[in-house]
Length: 341
Image (tube, rainbow, N blue to C red; front, side, top):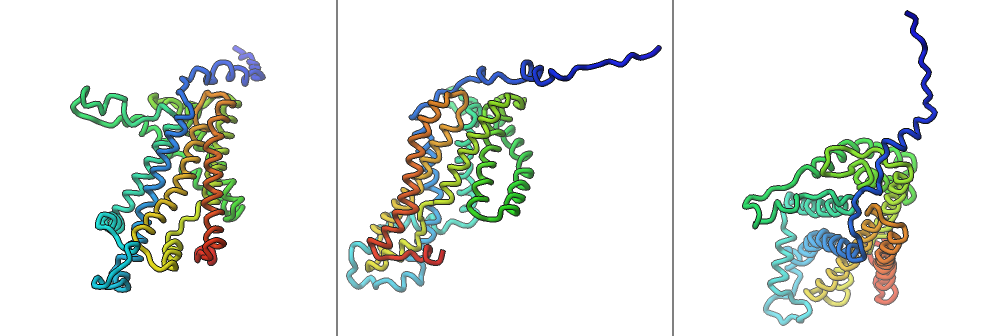
């Protein structure tokens, strides 16, 4: 028997995929988002950022003033000392405790704090990501608690799969464009797009409670995710490239030129450094909320992003430009790190 050739018309394949296989993003549940959501996540990121800065600050303080060599340069206890140069036992205990962390404890602390940042980012991008089922840690319901690991496993698998290609692309771009601000901008905007595409509610992760992955949401949705991720990467580049001036060694040197250093100066430096970094971290967290939530109108997204963007820009201005200029012009002090840098 002779087999007859079969002709297949594939001209309408794209239309078939669009109609039958693309995910309707309008059916994805909308998580309520408001300015209070922006403020809440911004405060959370700001608090974590201040804790990240606190331990190195205590370590530098201890090396400067509380080691045996530094204490030998201080006035003897038998002589009267100015109140401004004194230290209360409570503050000394805090500095001593955090400064003398072993390396393993320092590493563990920073991993823990970085994990909180990652958790907040995943929650912003995809509200279905959570560590508990909602009742697992309610002692009135269950007497034994446990973590809800399915979303964590899914996020881990996506991260492991994408890490090596992302690392190779990062290194290739670095070798092509060099290590400069423009190269960093390109790499961070592309990284932002990748993170949004991989972990967003409309991206590859989809619903973390499901074992399935979301591949097709349409060109418009994919382009929107990429643009929003690139905007978040650009904001992160802005924060990294124009980071607030936070060299505690220069601040120690400045207060020493005034005649000495005590607890009051230590707290002033602490609130200045942590305040500036928390300022920009708050803005960055709010921008991620505005750009990360799905199924909200562009007008609402713009309104949500406006306030944290202003906070980020103002924090960069005061921390990166105004503070060094104030020390140099108004206080006649040239920071050593800026001179050598």
